Image 1: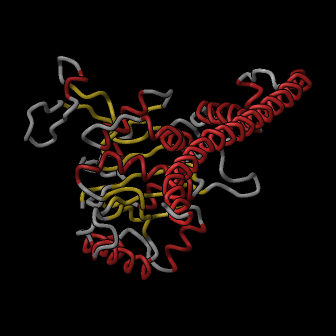
Image 2: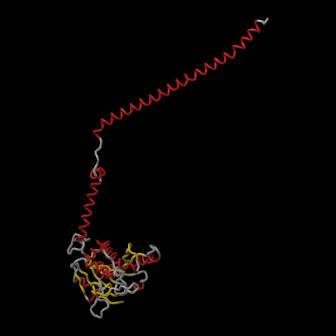
Image 3: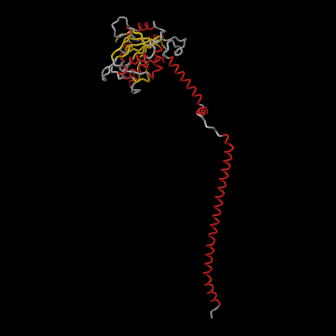
Length: 352
């Protein structure tokens, strides 16, 4: 007969798997509850965020409605310029353009006193004489200084009497090289140069040298006349001064040894003119003063200064200046005393 202890042990072995199964089932039943709880939390979080966004949108909408009446209108160009303070600047630009137009129109009107550089209390110089020179013409300069051109104190005294004489030269293509340094050193000793800082000294740039010379001369000195002389010309300085004194106060004078001549259209030939086709089928230059020496009155020199940027240059400086004089009401003075190569006894220049 089975004992009580044995029976209890057998019963216990039977009941133990059942208890494990019930524990597993209970655990499995709790998982959906946890998931449901977490889902509820997530739903509450999302709902809360959506509610906050809705509140924010409502606040912004209310602000927009209240401020809709204060929204800026569409600005015109004038409004924008006014807000930026540009309208006043625009007005000043217009006034400056009007002043410039007026200056251009008055720059070559005879008897124009408004464009004068000096005041009534300061008498105008009689003449500024510019002697064209180059880097290799030092011997010629020294010859002139020892002949017709005063030097040192005598040059200063001549300026006090109303006549300025300067050698006119530009700058080297290689700025600051030995050519420039030699000219600067020579000028420190003699003080008789007008150095054209913006002009490159080269044979092909000779036509533009006239623009730079007359512009620089009239901006530096206020004179009745401006004289261009080549460096192969000797001057009778006293005769030239006497000639100019007799014409003091006259405006619009273009003085020189007037000539014309054939236009050279064959490239490679001496005096070749690239713009030959502009001079008509006859290929003849218009009347102009010889480049050896010519003279412009104050207002004509001022006209070149004011309009230099738009003036056409040709292959030769005397042709270029002659073309500029055709565009204004210049008075041509053909004086054979200014024909340096002539055989006339009474003349103010001669070939050196």
